[in-house]
Length: 454
Image (tube, rainbow, N blue to C red; front, side):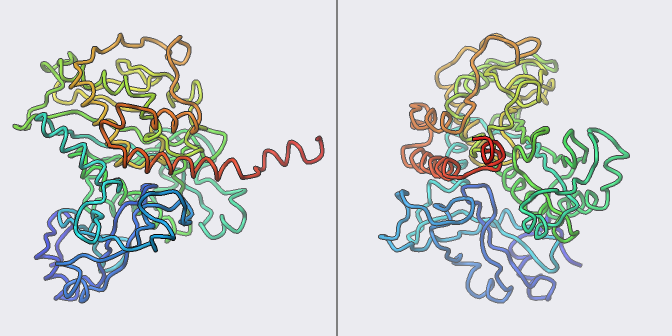
């Protein structure tokens, strides 16, 4: 009998390979863009060489742009340094089956230098560093991400050949909460729900969203490192299942002029005994710990927006009246605010609503934890809640362009104390690379507007 993802240990994987039930092991690490990258290893070679020693990969994986172009200006890599190797170090607590491929198991990895020292700028290490800081204060975060995407009946290759124009959305109208609308794409949704469950994620539900073809699959909360590990597996699975079905999905924050796709992050804290520390009882009263933590999230919203919204396209999503926040502030169960307090008793938590579907979950979660630590260590006072429509109130705005967000992150003393200069400088450079690529591009809008008229 084959073991499931939730049961799999390294000893069981070895037995599965020996029995011929697993023949491929995916060695995967998350890059700066939040994508899983790595190698497909044969089962025999995994047992002989990789299991105890890991495997190597070019260090440009942590210094490339979205199109995997080598980019100058990083301290980590350069042509002068020869683009050497990094180590993929397996974390066997992440073993899982990948049901959309036969006889395949994945293990997620940390990245390290060849001497074994961790690569501090890799997203998983950035998050683990903040988790260690929070653990020193006696707290452990739990939570979940809510990740939206747009599904198209047009396959990836056809979409590319048509320059991503005239894509056929999987729905023809707003199917938010519509059972009939999601029923029309249930073939895809059923595969995604069930195969992600088989891959070790605790799948809760699926629903339609506002934009054409826009969907969301929800997963149960767990510790934040596992949440992020699951998140990137979900993104890969959603794409691969769509491709196998002759469809495509996009996790762009704003794929068209309609509603954007979000990645709301829910989080709360527990102490060393596993007791929730955000509520003071069974109602909605916040503890001092929660007030200070959320105060840190609000206070650093401007400084850390870049880690929630890392691409030029991310900022197209921020529009008044769009359910994507534009104002710095928090509110009680108020979806017009950047930070929403929701739940009660042990379920009392905050929701960070700024990240889009293109966010790197490790970096966004690391930013939330660093922000909360800033609030705890400085005993920050939580400002008054925003009541009513936050879009129309005279409160500070989050950065509305990538240029502004990168500049705020680069100059942030809080960011440099929390993450260190190496991480801040590395990701600041990544932001500049993204901006330079966009600034050099001639868009369709410019051509349509000016070709004849200017």
